[in-house]
Length: 173
Image (tube, rainbow, N blue to C red):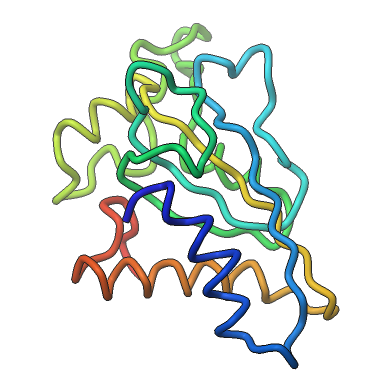
């Protein structure tokens, strides 16, 4: 699945899947966030509930809107609150506890560093911070904390049906 397909799947197909009688969902896509910004710009919508997407860094310009980014989706995650905290949990610490200095590469302790099956190019890009993240705030007309997780599962199912596998970094449904 490509990043540019996510918006169509989320906004159009998922709402049809839920039905006209179901809750109305509002999905707000962020701009791309690149780890090189980590000291100047916080992860977009960091305190909100929603889904977040890790993808290959589009070349030559990583600042593409989600619906323009034809890069492969590497990971789809969800958070009932605080997407920023969940993203940082995956990325791991950037400060080496032994020296108190920034690690090189900065994300060498990311969640997937020792996971078998992660392609070398993806592992190296993650460690170096050569990827982008999009956050998608999910709001519902129905008071339920489950809609962000439902959107995430829908995207994972769409990816699985299209590619017969989950995104590279998603280890389970």
